[in-house]
Each structure stands twice: as C-alpha cells, then as structure tokens.
Image (cartoon, rainbow, N blue to C red):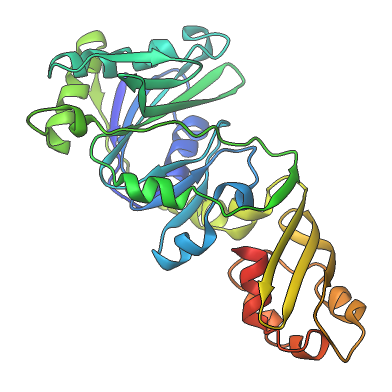
Length: 327
C-alpha cells in the first residue's frame, strides 16, 4: 500500500487529488492518504447545495464550499479536522462496508484511552456523539473510502455553517442528517496534537500493511492542479450540479411582506414568482422574466442591482431581494 500526505490545505486541490489518484494512478496498487482542509463545507455528490449551506455565514466567514465525488451528507472541515482516504479494490469491502476502514481509527483512540464505536451506517461516535463521518465512491471495481475525524474542530462553526435558515424546499437532493457532535480532544484529559494523532493513526495502518511513502512528481502536481481549476473550484460543479428543486421564502420588510417561489434547475432560476402586500409602479412579470436563468450564487446581487427593483416593489431594494433568495 502506498502512503500519501497531501502537500496542501486547499480543499479544491485535495478533492482533485483524490480523484486523480483514483482515476489516473496505478490501479494495481492501494493507497492511504491523509489530508486537511482550510475552513470548508464539503457537500455530498447528490446534495442540493442551497439546502445544506448557511450562505450568509459562509460568505461572512470566508468558508469554502466544495463538492466531493462520494455521496452522503454535508460536513464541515477545518484544520482541527483530519481526513483520511483509502483507495482499494472493491472486493475488499463489498456492498459499501464502511466498518473495515474505520478500525484503525478505533484502535488508535484506544491507545489514548478513548472508547470509540462504529454507529449506524457510516459514523464513529464517542459516548453516542459523532466525531467522524465516512463516505464511499465506487467505480469499475475500485473503491474510494474517505472519512473526516474531528480532533479539535470549531464546533460553533460546524453548527452555524450547516444551519440553513428556515425555507420550504421540495428537492430531490439527499439531505444531511444532523447529529450531536463532539471532538476527540473534548474527551481527553490531556489534548493530543494533530501531529501526534496523525502518527498514531499511521502506526495503526502501517502495522497492518506493507507501506511505501509516495510523493507526487511535478507533472502529477500540475495535472492535479489542472483538475482543480477545471472542475473542483468551479461554480458549475459546486452549485450548478445541484438537483432541481422548488423553494419558497418570505420576509417582512418595512415596505411590505414579500414571498418568492422559485423553480430551480442546475442552481439557476427557471421560473420565479413574487407575491406580497407591497406596492409597485411597473408590471412585476417583467422583473420575473428578467430573472430567469440567473445563477443562484454570490453574483446574484450584481445582476439584481441592474434591474431597478424599486420600480416593481416600492421601497424594496436589490440587496433585500438578494438576501431573501440566498440567505
């Protein structure tokens, strides 16, 4: 088995790295990878980003949003979080057997006096509280298993970044199941450093396998960076691949109540209707038509600023409508 430690904390690079190793590197070999991300929400492959991300909090705190190859729910990463990946032949864990890959984590924690348990479909818990989620991706006889381990994560950010404000969604996206969470260091009398925990986990994996450390070549690093730039950092991948959904939101402004109904496809507005007790001088359908096909992202406000919202809803601004729709 080959061991790789990512040289980067850029989430887009790291997710591209996983795909590169899975798709491009020797498929006769197995891989164990350790990596960390700067502050990031990582969305499952089949999820609707709008349903999982507290966009206002994400924007205010410069948190990345990145979509991974595997299914499952959304998770929050920061530098108090250690991520691990196994890439192996699928026959080593048929039928999405998660437990085989988390045994090294359980055994590593035993060494520091923590009793962790494999719970439900894909979680690790300490005294019933989740500290690790796991996910898998399979293709053509190969399996990618990855998990995130919260050693010392910011639990306030975990909650706030994934706490979406109330809105009515009708979506085919896979919704996250939020659990009570904890960190490893919240359960130790003497906190363990990230480097020491990495070494503890590596020793468990290395003891069970003949390991070879592997460094990427300059050519491989370039190709991973290309994949990052062409896929993983793009709005189309992180937001635009969201399933179609219908959404209703409403807010009371000083100028009146505004309700909006949106039908979205690939994170773009397909149809939009406004209702409320506001006043306006122009035909509201003109505004609704002008907003068709707009992407539901951080650039929405720029477009709305050009549409003279006040003509259609007296006293309502582009900033108001942008916040109503996105936040």
